[in-house]
Image (cartoon, rainbow, N blue to C red; front, side):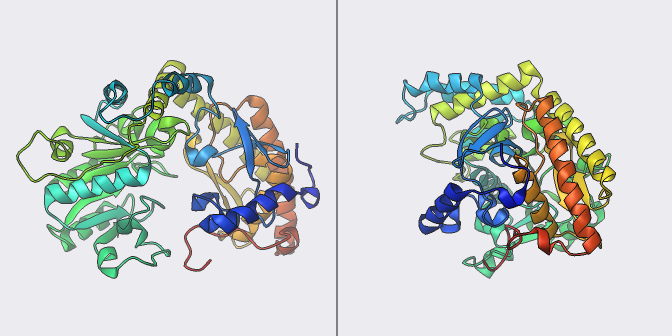
Length: 444
């Protein structure tokens, strides 16, 4: 276990590996959210392996891990039933010149799990799925504009979305201008947007829920608003899928979108995502219609047999073992413990746990109760020293009560230091280097 004193925590092998990564890989990672700029200086562990809710870095330290695989490994690392399903396919070949029987079995399993959808197409990452949904919406409506929920942080790596972020370099303004934003929960503002761009908006795309629950009737009213204005309603269920219910947020709240996208938890770390939705829309990307064809999704590796086998195993485990309920129970236990620890250390108004129990995040606020990257840095340093790797508090079902209790103890120690920094009105002495940085920023 890593030492309790951040000043003694040393990651020499990880530091060397990070330098090698930066020399070879732009950003030092294949996902910006995994970059070492998201962690305190010289304290970005490079992972050796993981099992269950724990990971080990190449320096030999073990951590309790949260937010595993950016929320994708919700069952814990190397889950035996998932690995067994994958191994069964590996010796049978992974990719062929024609569809494998696994493809139809996986589609049947998915549509049984998400009965609000009528057809599904698999791919490897969420961005491909959401971009395909946007393209399909534009094709069926004949409209150019996309309306994204401005309160949700990420939809795709593709130009239609990234052009709206501070990292818009290389994206023509003419592309960005076709994407407009609406605020979550504000029906009047959304109505005004749809009226302003009357008959121009192809779709409304949003996460059906985020760090706050939708107000009663909101999603149903948004459904009606989309229908009235003739645009496609798209739910991005990359995060809410499985964590809210096995059938996603649409299954929990009872509001059916025209199209929806799933990923993250679907493969428990294996690369698989899905675009699902109404048959009459999805079939426009197929062969059984007489209208202009839509190049919906066509990826060489989109139907790798072992990834689809992983997805089927995940869905079986979720339904048979009540995983969604377990995630909520674990999250509730963690949130209660962390909030008590923060309150007992006098920082309950500054270190704040937010979100649904199955998808917890935390906010670090300064002495003026404003979001602070410096205080986040201080907090992350203390967590790492205590053996907790937690860019969020998103739980996996592999966590045990002892893991939660240990995490709460480490949080209490971190909050004691947080209180000292607040009293000094300056966290700088506890940072030991530059603060962590937001992913989306214009300059490196």
